[in-house]
Amino acid sequence: TSYAGAVIAQTSGEYLIFTYADAVRQADYISVLFYNGTEAAGEVRQIDGVNGMAVLAVKAASMDSETRSEVKVLNLGNSYSVRIGDMVLGVGAPSGMVHSLTYGIVSYVARDVQVPDGITRVLYTDIRSNSGAGTFLVNTAGEIVGWTTAQYGTEDGGGLTAAVSISDYKTVLEKMTNNSPAPYFGIRGQEISEAMGETGIPRGVYVTEALAGSPAYDAGIQNGDIIVLFGEKEILTFKELQTQIETCQCGTAVAVKGMRRGREGYTELEYKVDIRAR
Image (tube, rainbow, N blue to C red):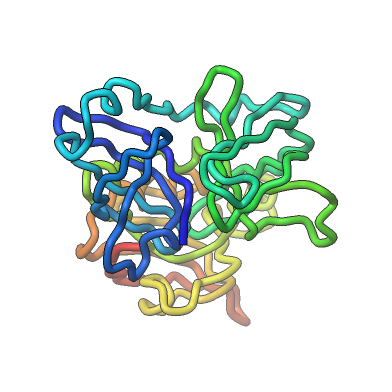
């Protein structure tokens, strides 16, 4: 099975390729085929199974000098600046075949979409895309601003393709390219606003879902809990929680304080969460 990938970093000895987790999960051997037909062995650097992302490494020594001179790194753009009406290219495998291309416009931007351990924007475009084979959204400056996914597709199709906003995953991709696993806490949630706090609800992040089998779930965190302290950091916004999670080291334990509603109001609870890789 063939999948598309994008070169997102280069060192003196290797090229790092961003692709879909399905492209490498349980693969016995990975072959990377460049645009000019050059083929090289790929090595898995890291896999983020929760977000469906993977980073591969290809040794520069396994490529001829002509290919090395022509391979260009696609920079990660600022997807927060993407607006409705912006033109984007769909590169990778929008037709279902690798090395294909299409173009279209951004039709809608969904904000504050809950994802595991964060919130993100989802970009909807009118391009036709085969998300399973891998398609990356590129702006007119030649920067990646997202990658397509079937996870946030519209209910009736609507002729739109959903793409995850790249800016919310730059920290994760940086860890993966440096061969560090992405830390996993394992909740979906929303923050308690100041106005909501004035009604007596504790300020923090409200857990809409403790994902089954996740470190948070295994530690006893439940749907409806409000996270108010992560390590030594007071949590008021989801961005603060997301930042704290991203700075964790896999294999370490973090103390988390939460508030749980009962018959007589909110009770303070403490958890010890063992952070592991996604």
